[in-house]
Image (tube, rainbow, N blue to C red; front, side, top):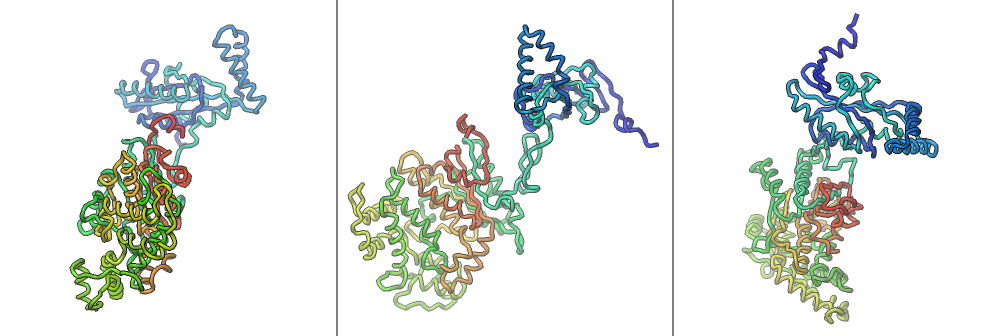
Length: 613
């Protein structure tokens, strides 16, 4: 015959040592029984999380039995007879509460018993005592229970913690409402909605929790917010997710693996390690695809916000919306947050006029081409034998000619000299079209005409930020991961410093994510000669995983323009872009971003108010 089950299960002798320890095979065991149930019944996952952090081995068994009230009838009668003692009056009130719950809400009372056990290798009694003490403390802290580490029979106590072994238990039976007892049972635990992911988090109980940073089908819109006081690991978390995004299956297409497009507006060097890690993984030949740079107002860092997509003469809709936001912020007093009346309409018209004046139309003044400014462009003109106007060559003609010979990269470099810069807005604001429409518009606060105030602020910006008044030289080339550190150009303290910081956040967003929002629908705004080139480009960018992160988002608290741009980006699910925002308090995010966020990482709360929120 087959051997009996008991001979298969119990293949080693049990040796009792004193009144607590039981030696079975290679381990010694100690039991912990729950003698009084919790005052505040808590879910089992809370107990498992605390014990998981302690990293000690343990097991438990719960037994629920019917007829709880009938089984406790004798105790109820005894408590009534001996009600002169305070402890019995507490029992009377407890029985009365159970009776009321049964009569009013039809709750069922059951008998609940719970037994726990932990173990350690034979000969390590000190470790076993420490583990038993920790287990007892954790169980008692689980809703304020009472425990006992001594049972009448140590072996019976240890075996009571084995689920399904026997319905007899050394644990003291407690009378509990079924609705309170069920959540205490180990029938559920926290799991990830993803079966696999490139980021592996660890639950407090030690379990692995996979996370897919690309979102996948479970999170089509990815807007993450990271909230914690300084030094709590927000930047580490954001870098981990960015690394996971680089390693996720979302970067694979029919042509193989390709880095996602990641841009981060950083304050400090918290993301420099992330970029270096990616550079080392790419190797010398592809090191240029990940760049970390510190923004400065110095030669070599020139960036013109009026740059266009190669071959275009007018900005795309989203590019024009950014220009209007940026110039509205540029023409605001540091203490104000709302643009002057009529200024937004004037800015829109001035931008259109500035681009028109840079084209070859009657009354315009297009930019003249000069040799020696861009040597690579000069070499391409000679190589392809491009013929320009002998007396009056234009940069716009150079752009068109290079596009015709498919030198789109050089055409982009040449186009930087064909578009307006900040100082060209002065001429545009003085044009007849703008003056006729806004000649009578006066600013009540300063008693100036709108055009005069606009010119004054533009001149001031040119003086403060000379790198914004020159053709672009801050060129990241084919880089796909770019971290822009604004530490040196984003001061804090005064109103003027805060305004400069807001401008740099908006500028950083444009530098990093200007091409993130391209999609095939915008082809109708592109001139026909370069439409086929941009069709492939727009489609590739649209299908690529893109992510834009902002560090220290609380610095934009007083700037509706910056926040309006971010909220506009957050609503653009059709652009297939992920957004991440890090700040010290949840209130720094704003209600709009909080309501739209689909990933909320709260690493720590600074105070009680923050915890409640």
